[in-house]
Amino acid sequence: MSTLAERFHEIGLTPPNVARADLPFAPCVRVGDILYISGQIPERGDDIAVIGKVGEGVSLDEAREAAELCAANALFWLDRELRGDLDRVVRIAKVTVYVNAAPGFSQISQVGNGASELFLKILGTRGEHARSALGMAALPLNVPVEVDAIVHVR
Image (tube, rainbow, N blue to C red; front, side, top):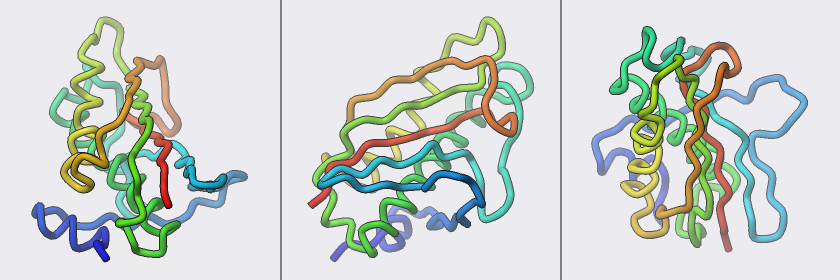
């Protein structure tokens, strides 16, 4: 059985740890063999790692790192739903990356690569996915990036 913590340690990263927010929706919902992971923001524990618009106070590199953290948090909820057994992941099917973009910022796809690359590092070919990356006028709590995912599991 491959665990999330093991995979993170193998690639030299600290495993995520996210507290469930007191919100009127679930961080992850399973319908049959599909998991829907709610939009994840760049938070570590109870702290938001970065705030602001990409291209206006948040650099491309910072935004890519924020997207990676969002993907890590999505993997946290995936791991929790699968009770620590990432071998049950068939494939990440679809990822959507939302970028809080300043007017004129057009490197939306490069920001999304931060999330996509982490899914690939953790899950290999099972992490390869379809993706949309969208520029937004604003995101919750003024975070620069939010990432959600749809995952096929067994």
